[in-house]
Image (cartoon, rainbow, N blue to C red; front, top):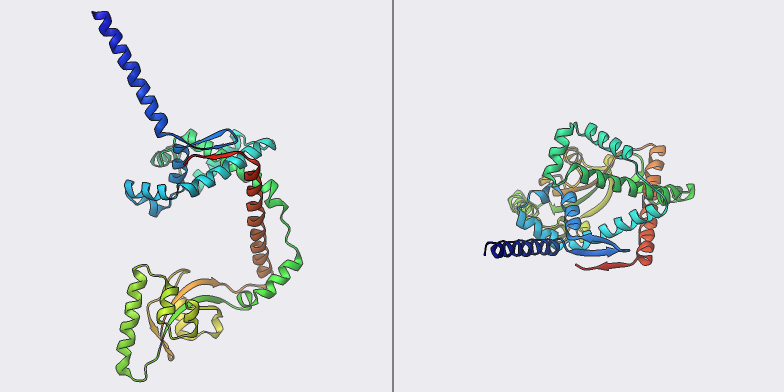
Length: 319
């Protein structure tokens, strides 16, 4: 009888282990196969966790998971591209040594003033072990080397392209500091009695902006300036051509910020600073445009290269 009970307990234990293993497999299911290489659900979610912004991390668990679920396909595409790049780098004989990874970690520790302990604590909060982090770094270095060797280092920007672009962007890169702004403009009332009405209307616009409404949409709705039809976009304006009130307000603003309503002799303005362009020498302008053109070429060639890898690969998505 005792032996029968022991056999029964063993069977229950085996069945329990089988159920646990089965549940584990179901939880960490395969979400894609890239040339026989498997991508699991946990691979995908670890990537999303690692790339989450501070704002995303501030959400509670349920809200964050919902955002992740809504963006699974986007991140899976990115993960598939990474797998293809790593596989291609391997075929081309590109490797990353343990010394390369060690040097990268030391640079990160130095940059953020971390010790071994604080680094591991930081990784723990991100749900990573040091070994997992080393593996991720190794993959990032490998992809970077692969992209540099086979795409970025082959980009050449001609003098003719730079000259042509400089001419086309003369408004932006001309002499002196310039600002690219949007504005919502209220014409100056004929008498002071209407001034309060205009200010109340501007106050309502500010409230709607704070509530998250688009500046361009409100410019189309409220602005008395012709630029209102373009979402308030006035293009690039040189600082030397601006009224003092504009210069005073813009000097306190950062890119992306919206001003409080302010008066000029023309009326009441609310402005958004889209971009600030510092005064540049000719050589600085040339270098800035060269980098811009090089980046445009890189994105075009990179997207084309990835498309080619995808077309040759065998990819199965199981989301």
